[in-house]
Image (tube, rainbow, N blue to C red; front, side, top):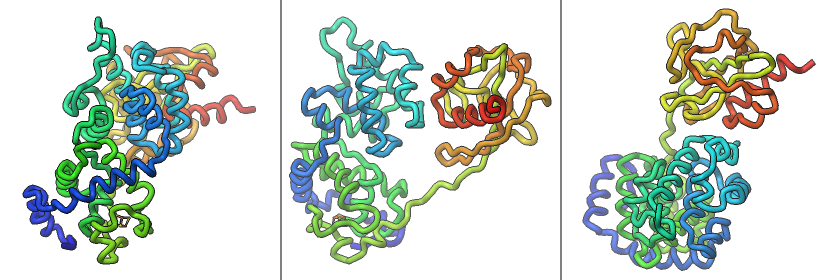
Length: 379
Ligand code: SF4
């Protein structure tokens, strides 16, 4: 059954609901066997095999949320060297955690990992060993652990049969059923979750989940999949119909939104002002950086900062930098000003230049700082 129109989704979902796709139950052990034989020895897999410590898997899952494997690997090693256990992470300072992941972006995920570590350690108080979550549901209660991460963690560390659905899984399922629609249609996503939960290998759920993702990353790639060496080719409709080019269709992309920002570097007797962005900020929540304003109408308003700030016409403009955050394309004006122009009612840390260098985490602040150095300190 080829699925080319949205009107065909409903009957497809009905069949999933009715567990009509029993043939996939034969596919699962085949996939698991392939994975067990061919899996890459990624550091978190090696560590899990050696120590069975959920911490090693958890850190990897958080890092991999927005970052590709090759970039994650060196950071993962460094992070574990600095915070070898969940105790070390729970007892670390927030700034040290952020410094350890500098360059990876999306820093809020690491604040939540840090919070989660404190909670895990806190929940274990008085007991000899750490009390890790004991189910998919319990994993999901930790900050920053959504459906996907909880499924990965509970299947790998607890052998719970909870399927993961990410872009790789969506593509593989689309091809197995010759679905020629965008794979990230929310209604399809829901169906794939059910399908995954139906056909997940009950004995090796973690290997099934990792296997289907590994398949998507290495064999069933977006263009030019290696069908001849694919362990699930027997069950694949797109291969049979010679339609791997059209199944799935292009993903629905979010439109980019253009926004203007203003970053202000305040100075006080050779020192520079850093503020912690509030939780309510639109961008870079809870990250130390420069005072940030968002365009509102013809003017700018502080991004999440409470208190008062009068936009001074005397702020000196240094130029602009471009930056992208998720689907926002930002044009960022960078200015500098005297501490008397700084917002009132804010906690500002005044640091010398070398301290600023080491404290800035977000690439946006680093770009602004680079521009500042070029414009004001380079002879
Ligand atoms: S046979 Fe080809 S298209 Fe089908 S799942 Fe395997 S690699 Fe993907």
